Structures are given as structure tokens and as C-alpha cells.
Image (cartoon, rainbow, N blue to C red):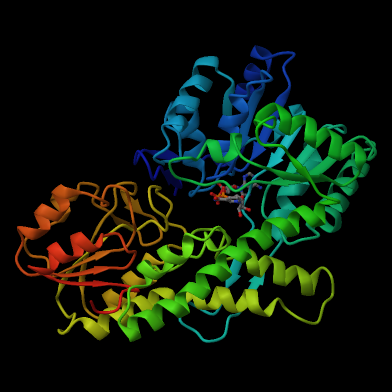
Length: 499
Ligand SMILES: NC(=O)c1ccc[n+]([C@@H]2O[C@H](COP(=O)([O-])OP(=O)(O)OC[C@H]3O[C@@H](n4cnc5c(N)ncnc54)[C@H](O)[C@@H]3O)[C@@H](O)[C@H]2O)c1
């Protein structure tokens, strides 16, 4: 049976082709842009698709940009979607649509699944995923996981088997420290040698950014600090020159590190720091709940000191693709690429604590909800892992949903950015007025989307309903709103002791 790739944005279904044969479209595109430098972005996900947009809208250079993804049920729709006029990433940043429309006007962005694209590239940017497979589940005491590099290695091989001998290969994927030198370089060298090409002419570097899906998506790539390194002097120079054409480096100067292992480590250290910070906040929110104080009030007071400005608030959990895995990539590299007998123990513990946050949130709920959940109508407001974006990967709302469901609750969902929850294979309501229905017993604020925040209409609607149990897991409501709602409903806020 023919496989179907369904767009999670438009719902359009595309038949997945058996083989890659996009060559004519690429040749036509290249002919149209003859003489222009060609950038190929490998991986059209949350980072690669937007990176391709930024390259197509470079202020310094007229690039012809080709995005490559795989022919599979989960990804093929992204290729079709880009070529047919619907950008495959939904976020609240209006620049996404602006940049996409500009690229369409210039006709300088093409998406394909044909690796032939790499043969035309002057610059190849690697923005594919490199996953950590957690085998321990969300609520286990001990964390167990593995890192399988085979898909990543295959992707690099595809580049080596097709690229020009003088291409610049820039890895942006978050990788275990040591990957460019110990894994990517040997693969590219071997592929070029097999093709009878020189291994002295290509350049290889690693650079990372902190892509922030949400209202500042484009800015987080184009107008933000970057760290980079090359595997040798020539590579570093070429990476720098290239980055200067797509990033506002006069305002946000680049930082060069000693080698690619250092940049790779910088990326995972930065994310591990953030993950640890959240794990730390988790413990203190429990303490605040137990001792009847409001952790938000405390954190706000401490945050006024510049030295402590990034102390984290509590929440339903840590989700998304990066913070849930990056400390583990680092720990894995320490043992497996550098032969250390010891893991990064604190960082691994941080991940385990964060993984258990949805369970803590559920237990907190159970501790305060006076009824059985059996047959109760529960509405979750927000399924994405982060506010203002439609990214549901590793969303902490998923295990929370499962705990609720296992306890017999009848769940309904709303999220302004997600119409279909791929991981759970269920539709999600996008209209708030339809989602809030009289039959509800419980409403859980599970993602702090801007649509729910400071929303007087929402408060008025809630006040017009019969008695509800409202559980705010993300500290969305102000104290004033909580007080208002409490006149009619039971309101509990994670991290706020009973007030
Ligand atoms: N999401 C973020 O905010 C963020 C920020 C900084 C860095 N990163 C890192 O960037 C990388 C990409 O993240 P993402 O969020 O875009 O992931 P993603 O899963 O959304 O996208 C990855 C894409 O790469 C494609 N792909 C995989 N193998 C391929 C191959 N051989 N050829 C072509 N395409 C292939 C996948 O099909 C997918 O569409 C990860 O390493 C991530 O850790 C992510």
C-alpha cells in the first residue's frame, strides 16, 4: 500500500514516492540561479527549515538555497509543503511568514529529497536530529539511555558520497563532543578518497546557536551570538566568512573556540546548565508547597539581583528536543568517545529529576483533588512543550495526559498552535471558546501560551461556569486572577503553597 505523509499543519496528504527522483526540479532551480553560491541545508526540522529561510534572506549574499529531507511518512510532507506555499513550522514570529514569502518571491528556496542536491553545494549545513533513546521511561528512579549514531553517520556518508571536494560542511546538529573530529571527518575523508577526490580541499566546522522557537524565532538565528570552530585554520576562516553573510555579526560578534570539540561541548554544557537549573527549581517548589509559601514570589525577589537573574520558576516539566537529551549526549561522549570511566553524574541526575516533573505535578493534583478522576471531564490547555510554539516533542504534557487518562479522566485538549497531536495521534481543539464547555470538571493550564495569559475574556468565561477545579501548572495566572477565580472555583497553582 502506498504510504502517506500527512502535513501536521494543513492536514494535506501526500503520497510518499518509492525512490528519490527530484533531479529535474533541482537542475531547473540551479539553472535559474546560475553563478550564485548554493547552500544545501540537510534536515528541514525546527532548526533547518528556519535556517534555510535565514540563508535565503541573507543581507550580504544572494544564495540559492536547497533544503533536503528524507522520503518518509513523517517528513515528506515538509518538502512538499515548502515547495507548495505553506511553511512547515508554526510559531508566533511574524518574520517566519515574511521571510518565507520573500524567498518565494525570489524563488531562491527549493526543498527536495534527492541527495543530488549536495553535488551542487558550496556550503552544506547539517541540521538533522541526533536522538537519545531513553529506555527508562518518565517515572523510573534510574535513568537508562543509549545514543545510536548510525542514522547520523549515514547522513554524513550521503554528504561525502555526493559533495564537491571543496565544499564547506558546517555541522549545526547538537552532537556528542568530539563528533566532528572523531566521526564526521573520517567519514568524509573515506568517502572522498573512494571517489578519487582530494581530502585537502574541503572545510569542516561546527557552530551552534540557541534557536528559540516562538516570537523571536528568526532573530534567535539572525540576530544572536554564535560560537564556531573549524577542524583546521582554513576551515575556521571559511566558517567565519560564511556566518558573516547570514548573521548580524557587527552587532553580535562571533566567538571562535579552539576546536570543534570545544564548540560541541559548549552547546551541550549550555543546555545542561539550563536543565540543571530547572531540576534545582523543582526541589524548591516542592519545599514551597509543603511550607505554604509562593515560590513565584520568592524567585521574583531573588531574580532582581543580576547575579541570580536566571533562577527558574517551577512548571509541569521540561520538554522539547534539546534539554531532555543534551546532558546525556555529553555524558555519553565522556565515556564512549573519550574513554572516561565516569558519567556526568550531576547532569544525568538533573535529567532524571526533570523527567519526573509531570509525575510530581500529577501527584500534587491528586493530593488536592478531593474526588476520583474516574469519568471526570478534564480539559488540558496547551499540549506543546513550550509557550507560543507548536512543538510537542517530548512535551511534559504527554506523560501528564497519560497519568490523568490512566486514572479514568475523560480528557479534552486545546492548543492554539497544535491542531493534531502527532505523538498521541489525536486532534486538538484550536478554538478556546469551544474548548471551555459546561460539562467540564477540571481545567489544567499545561502550557503558558500567550493566548491564555492576561486574558480577561478567559477569566470572565471561567467565572461564568459552574464550580471547577482549576490547576495551573505553569504559574500563568496572576495572584489577582487566582483570587478572583477562587471566589467561584477551587484553584491550585504548582509551586504556590496554599494561600
Ligand atoms: N529545536 C531547537 O530549538 C534547537 C536549537 C538548537 C539546536 N538544535 C539542534 O538542531 C538539530 C535539529 O533539531 P530540530 O529541532 O530541527 O530537529 P527536527 O527533528 O525537527 O528536524 C530534523 C530533520 O532532519 C531530518 N533528517 C534526518 N536525517 C536526515 C538525512 N539523512 N537527510 C536529510 N534530512 C534528515 C529529519 O527528517 C527532520 O525533518 C538537533 O541536533 C537539535 O538538538 C535544536
